[in-house]
Structures are given as C-alpha cells and as structure tokens.
Length: 463
Image (cartoon, rainbow, N blue to C red; front, top):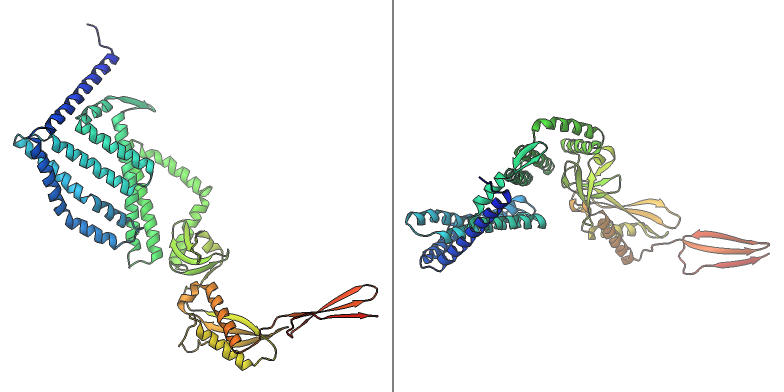
C-alpha cells in the first residue's frame, strides 16, 4: 500500500480547513438573515441593558475609589481600568449564560456565540490599552486577542491548538511542543506583569498608611515590590521549565558581583537603611548637601533619594552621600531659624534712626516671626568699615521661610532699602581719588575715601 507524503497530508488538511471556514461563514450569513436571529439580537440587547443596570453600583464605587487616590497611584489606575470594563464583563457573562439556555430549548445560538467572543476580545483590548503604555506590546497583544476571537468564531481554535501541540521542536536536548512554549511564555509574562502590579499596589498602600512614616513606608514599599517581582520571576522560570536548582550557581555569581561591580549599589542600599533607622533625614525635610544640592526630600528609595530644588528640579542623590559627607538638615528638630541680613550706612548717620528703619523693614516682611518673646527682630552694629557703618538685621523666620532661602534674603534686602530711603539714610560706596604726579616718570596713587562724590578728582603736580 502506497503511503501518502507529508506534503500531501498538509495540503489535504489545509483544503479541509478552508472548506470548513467557507461553510461556517455561509452558515453565519444564513443565520444572520433568518427569522430565528431576531431572538438572538433581542437577547443581546436585553443582556446589554441588564448588564448596564447591574454594573452601576460597582462602577460608582470604583469611581469613588479612584477619586480618593492620587493619579500616580497604582490603585487609581486599577480602579479606572476596572470601571471601564464592568459593564462589558457583566454583559459577556449574561451572554455566556444565555448560550446554553438557547441550546436547551432547541434555538440557534451562533450569533450569541459571536457576540460573546467579540465582547471578550474587546474587554481584553480595553485592559491592554489602559495599563500598557508600550505601543509595540499593546498592539501585539491587541492583535493576538482579536486573532483568538476570530479563530473561536470560525471554530478553528481547537484545530489550531491541536496542530501547535503536535508540532515538536528541540532546544538544548529538550523536546516540547510549540503550544507548550507559547503557553509558558504567556504565563511567565503574565506572572511578571502581575508581580509588578502587585508590588506597585503594595507600595502605594504603604505610602498612604498613617501608621508609618513616609520614609519607612517608601522603603518597605520598595522591598515588597522587589519581593513580588522576584517571586514572579521564579514562577515564570518554573513555568518555562528552568531548573531552579541551577540558580545556586547564579546566587554565587551574584555574591561575587556584589563584591566587585555591585559594590556601590549595595553600599547605597545599606546607607538608605541607616538613614531610615537613624531618622536623620526624612521625607519633607529641607536639606543642604556638601555638594551644593539644596532642596526638599521627596522620596527615600533603596538606591537613591529624590531631592526637589526650589526651581522644581528633581535630583537623584545616592544614599551614600548622606553618610559620607556633611548634610545640613534645616528641619531636623525645628524649622524656625535666624537670618542675618547685612547692610551699611554712611558715617554720621543717626544710629537710632538706622535701628528704627531696620525694625520697620523686618515688620514689613512676611517671613518674620512675630509675637514670640526672645525672638524679636534686632539691629546690630557689627563693624566700622572703610566706607560705612556696617549693621545686621537679625530676625527669626517662620516655618515656611526655611525652604525659600533666596527669596527670603531678597525680600529683606528690598524692605531695608525701602526703609533707608524713607528716612533719607545714605548708603555709601567707595570713592577713589587719583593723584597724578609727574617727574622723571609717572607715579599713580589711589586712595579710598568714605565721602560721596559724583566726580573723580585729578591733581597734577610738577616738580
């Protein structure tokens, strides 16, 4: 008996599949045009209406949950995404329940099956577009969802899966089917995505907790996020078929990597733990580093600390810098601090009038702390300068002023200048008189005087 060649078998299978597709398409077209399709369309409309009213309560609760969270919170995105699919999910469930009911009464249900399949694909697409920002990944998953729905509608899903399951490939001496490979990769990708989402949710929940400090909540959130991702990676490797006992070699290599290439990362991690335990720097503190970075601490992460300057510039500072270098924490114990603003007036000015002008200037500035005994503004005479009597306005500042050092000094300088002009107190500047003496050569002498003059004085003496 002559055997049939594999190519001929494949050709026959393809012809059978093509013939089956043509028959299914013709059958669906005939059913769409039949009177019995009217009951199916009515069932679809009824399922949509009932699903709409049943989904109102969960949708309202999800919207309230989203309104109570920040936009950057993972729970906000989860609530918004869930609210968008509640109605189609309830409608799809009602349709899948209606399909066997129609079958029990001997009614056709092909249109119901098509509608439910398309609705399932649409739900998946909405979830993908809401939670995956990568355009290539989102488009690939969207195409895959519609492809599976099309195969199910045309009754080709089972033949395709059987064909993929029967196709065996060999990698590294291990034989497995294409279906198992694709399924393992899909489960692994889903585990990684779910681990990342769970980590973000745990991190957001800890940060919103009132029982933990923002710094501790941030660190615990980072640790939980990494733990969830590691668990997801282990699950993904197990699903793919990687022997986890081989990871012992990887752990040894990782230890060597920490000792050499990852030493800085490990050092920053330990420094972050020390910062959180000592509480020397907390979220919300206004700090000044030895490197010149000045700003508000926003986040303390495992590797670095996020500092936002007054110019709204975000700077990632390695945690190690907070341990090895000097750190000025302006708000460690108390946010109120004292500022000294130097200014000068001409010799011969009334000192009491200068004091009055300085105190009035302090009263005009919004940053001045008022009503606290022992912390009232003062005017000090600090030095007899070359050109002026040098004073300092000494004032205690409010809590809000500590994070605006540049603006505070500018406001005090502005108020002092206004007050000095009000009382006609002169602000001196150095004057230089040039004496030119000519003999065998040219000798130039420069002297500095404190008197105010608008022109230079030239004296020419000839021997």
